[in-house]
Amino acid sequence: MLHNSRKLAWRKGALLIVAVLLVMTMAACGAKETEVATYKGGNVTDKEFNKYLDVFTVIQPTYAQLIEIPQFKEQLLQQYISYKILGSQASEESVKTAKTEVEEQMKQFKEQLKTNTELKAALDEKKLKNKDMENYLLLTSKVVAHMNSQVTDEQMKTEYETNGADYATVTVRHILVATKTTDETTQEEKELRTSEVALARAKEVKQKLEAGGEWAALAKEYSDDPGSKETGGLYADKKNGSWVEEFKQAAYKQEVGVIGDPVETEYGYHVILVEKRDTPAFDKLSDTDKEAVRSAVAYTLMNKYMTDELPKQEIVSKLPKAEEETPASDAPAGEETPATDAPATEAPAAK
Image 1 (cartoon, one colour):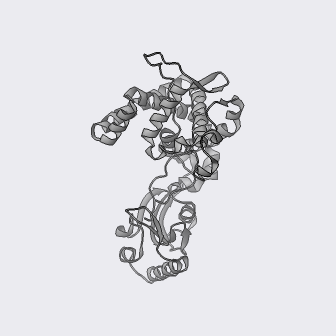
Image 2 (spheres, rainbow, N blue to C red; image 1 turned 135 degrees about the horizontal axis):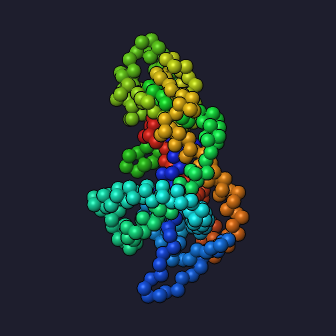
Image 3 (cartoon, rainbow, N blue to C red; image 1 turned 60 degrees about the horizontal axis):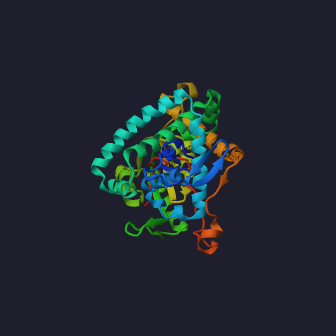
């Protein structure tokens, strides 16, 4: 998929990545809990953190091996602590909002369990109960509601004016001439054609369109985008912020009704026609669109908290250090803790 670098709905990403659990009750056997971190006004025990990691790996199974990397686990611990702190700061109104959302989320979760055997098996393997998931969602939703409550109208207006391209609704047609392809079996990326060949092919299709060629026929012949090649390259009434930066800017700035010069993205070259673009004034935005703006500001505030405020919490981690567990030469390079942003919505794609 063509994903943008700036995510608007941080809420979903937060649910998937950096959610936190309530401190779990001690087991009936009375086993002693070990402290793995302290911070101003609180601590984290091994039982609660391990429970968090269990839920985390069920929700994000692709990270199951990564949590054994000391640096990665350390960053998850930092995020866990930030959620404990922020969740405790939520107002009564924010808590009420969070509980309402969690009720609906748990209904969906229980319905999914009826048919998703893999999810059920993963929960059983970790000995996780519905209450664990409910706690997971509740603390997360508290933080989301709390951060959203910190957003002012003035901040929202500034965000909208600064990043208007993200909030425009556009209808475009495009033909993608890809430079790479992905093997459906191995997921390995391979070169499909060189950049020079792709650009020449994109210019060729543009000339044919300008000469009166039909989008439906030319998209089928030239486009490497499986999401639109059978519909004349059409993406109707899409949020512009869901697309990668170069495509987004072209859809926002290109003259309506005019086929633009080929636009290069990481996927190849796009020939784009903007058929319609709606950019209402801030006070004319729908409630849904205003919530998207609010989420973007909340995401920024969350990042600011992680950068500026969390270090002031005097966190002392007692997790084993990297050199104590994993030689530097054995650790995967370039791995990062999942960000708190949300997955981007669907957009013109290249497989």
